[in-house]
Length: 275
Image (cartoon, rainbow, N blue to C red; front, side, top):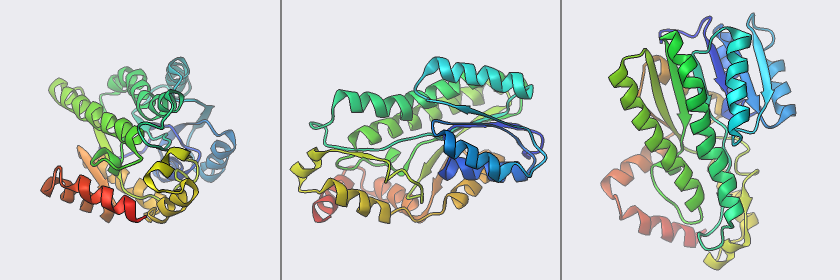
């Protein structure tokens, strides 16, 4: 993909954070938008931020864990815009819990959004994107799709899954030479609401951690502005990169894991004890 002008992009989680900033930057470059978010108020705010651009914008209040709803959104996007070139599977949530303390309901909740939401978005949009012969699938993993951390087993599981799913997809698309590509994004700490909106349960106390304090500490590591993350993602799409690490923290963690593929776990455990 050489540019975004007159292309059509679908974005999940477009009501805030990276998703909102992607919408703003794409709109400035003349890209038409199909925006979705479970937060209707945030979605309306994004529309206000992009409406001055001469583009077509459609919206849908959407729970990405609902397969039929995502299917309907994909169909509506093509009906409203005539085609679709990109899907940014960006919506995500966080859960802080020990493995033992995590309820099955919470596990199903995070897997439904972080993993199945990406799968549904990919599978429902991909056939339409292929029709353009000039498209991209962009799936947001995480720095926690590179290394695992105590209290983040569920989040780690979903983000590692997104990584494997997207990298396999990329290889298939390369073989097919369909004109469609895919990108797996690993953001480090991005200044979004994900920490404040995270579910934290009392099982963290068994590790000597205070759930409320953990949220505040986690929030301190969110340093990269979402607009910078969005800019890097769009540049990576134009350059047809396979993987994107966002932030110095992501690059350090990636290098550390390569040097100490199992040893990093002891250091992460020690750092958790000191929090």
